[in-house]
Image (cartoon, rainbow, N blue to C red; front, side, top):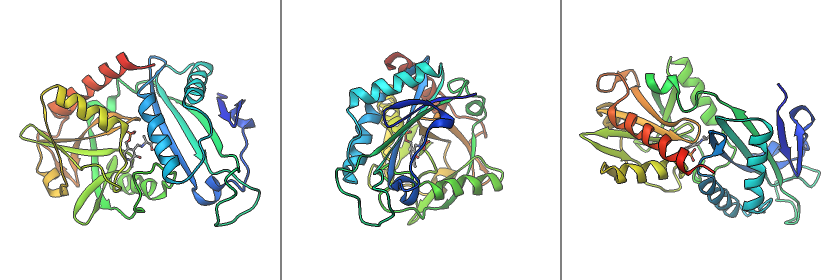
Length: 286
Ligand code: PDD
């Protein structure tokens, strides 16, 4: 089925959308992105994603392609044109192209490239995978040092997913200096004796928009939250674990490196947080 996508001001059928081969996003991964989920045809936490996008652009001295209001309008128009009830809107901004390859950034007035497309994901909220829970493996974190900037350098996370698949698992958590950083495309948590533990924000991890919302909702529900470094052995010995992301919300983790957590089924904290998060997100969606 043809999708309507957005490229630099135009809504086009996907097969007609074109970006230059000299675009720095393509040649140098000189680009940032956002993924915003859609429930009931509405955007979840658009504001959070817009604020993080601006931060990513600022950190890389990249120009803003348009205003936040225009971005919202483009998101809504794509959701409408593609009839998305549940799914995702992917947005990417690159430093554009001045028609050649050079390590030096092009002139500051080179227009950035802005691309958006939708992905229809029926069953995003009522996801059978969340009822089963995910199996994860641990791998070394060999990514660059600015993981707080949401760049499109996703080769290693993509390899991590393949390593997980090869090991019969669903995903991987990454480890640096003996501590878990995050999942390949999500933030990581474990629960022990009712306390939720997750790594504090720094340049080492992406500042998840879902993480922020889930930690707020956990505190509102009187759950204990501890933001500190943790090891994979602590997570393996936990009562339960989970991940958060815009594309999977709260996803229970039932196995780490072949070790079943608790009863080996989604735990009560992750299950409850998933319910609360989806419920509250639906209410606040725009
Ligand atoms: N990934 N950590 C990493 C490395 C991520 O790639 C993501 C999101 C997150 C969670 O962030 P948020 O809650 O804002 O989605 C954490 C997106 C979904 C992706 O690459 O598709």
